Image 1 (cartoon, helix red, strand yellow):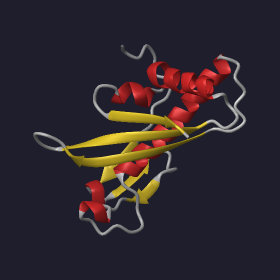
Image 2 (cartoon, rainbow, N blue to C red):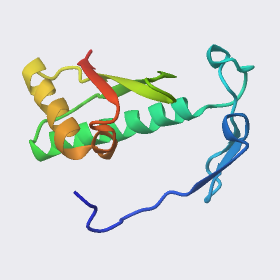
Image 3 (cartoon, rainbow, N blue to C red):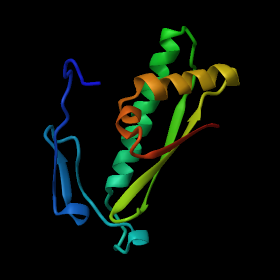
Length: 142
C-alpha cells in the first residue's frame, strides 16, 4: 500500500558515515557517530545507526500499542518497549539487521496485551510495515 497523504517529514543529514556526524533540520539531533567496538571501531561517546533505529522503533511501536489500546478502550497505566537491533553479515553479501522488541504492559491481562501487540504490529506501526518481509522482527511480552 502507498501513503495517501504525508503528514510529517523528518529530515536529517549525515556526513562521514558511521564515523561522522548527524544533525536534523530542526537542530534537535546534533551529534557524532562512532563505530561500536563490536564492529571493529573505537566505541566511545557517540551513537550509531542501530541505536537510532532501536530508539525510533521502540518509540513508534509503543505509540502504536497505545493507539490500539485507546481504540479498544483498554486503559494503559504503564507501557514500555525495549528494542534491540542487531547487525551482522548476510548471505550472499552485505549486512542485515534483526530486531527484538520486548513490550511491557503491566496490569493488562496477558491475552488482551498480546492482542494489542499483534494488532499494533500487523496494522498500525509504520516501522513494522517497513520491516515486514525484510527484517526478522521478534516480539515478546515481558
